[in-house]
Length: 88
Image (cartoon, rainbow, N blue to C red; front, side, top):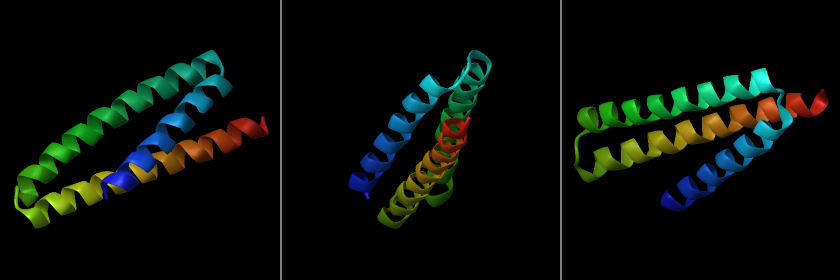
């Protein structure tokens, strides 16, 4: 899972940087604000899940898997935004 997490994190960061360069100033500011909010959500949700699932191996696996899914979901959303930005 950690290899896939690293791949998806890299995909998210690469797409974010490319998207930032495609957007106008207002949309760029909104993306930065949204990404910071998503990072805060990711951190808070991870802390909640750690409390709920506990620190046993199965719980840690669930927390890691959920974090990976959230990163994939965010990377997919940024890919969609980039697709639209490229059409304009």
